[in-house]
Image (cartoon, rainbow, N blue to C red):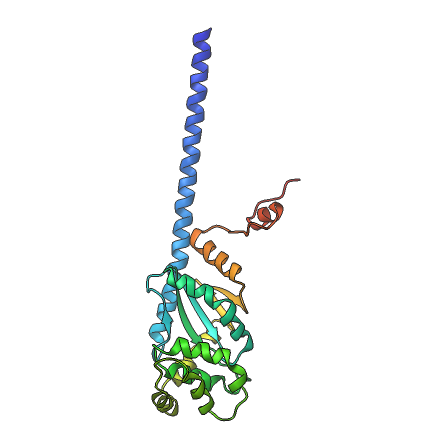
Length: 252
């Protein structure tokens, strides 16, 4: 009798172990598939951005490592008040992710037609060159009230970007007068039309559009989701809402 009991227990134990091993293998296969899907999405976004950069008629500002896993593309109007808010609220998070090697950023121009000096501002920012572009961009976004409605173009803009270390304003003025970056700016407008971007700021995080000023936590969660392939929910969200966000049905 005891031999039969031990035999039955052994058989049950083998069945449990076998089922557990099968379940573990299923989870591992699911993880591998998820990782492959995530890699495919990130790679597709990077290749799409690279393709646009190759088609551009001139240099487009890019920061970050070329092999950074997440490609972010920004469409910004330097005279747009929301873009100035984006610069204060969202850009520090992006800069942190760039420094960590997680994000690469491509900057596209989208000077809106109802902002009279936005095109001039984009031209001056580009004319500062690759070393001065980000600094000029920051200065112009933070000083919109000083140049946004001015008719003294480009002098008022040059006075602003002269605050950026290393910028040669005479060279910037010569570049502006020749309109050397007009084709690049227009290409940004064409990219915006192609992607149906109608508002600034708009950023694409690995192809996923986010419109307006993005909260830092939302941006970090979006990047986390893209890297992990899972829905990341803030810890202060109630349990029932976390389940809904993860696609789980609530208990009846």
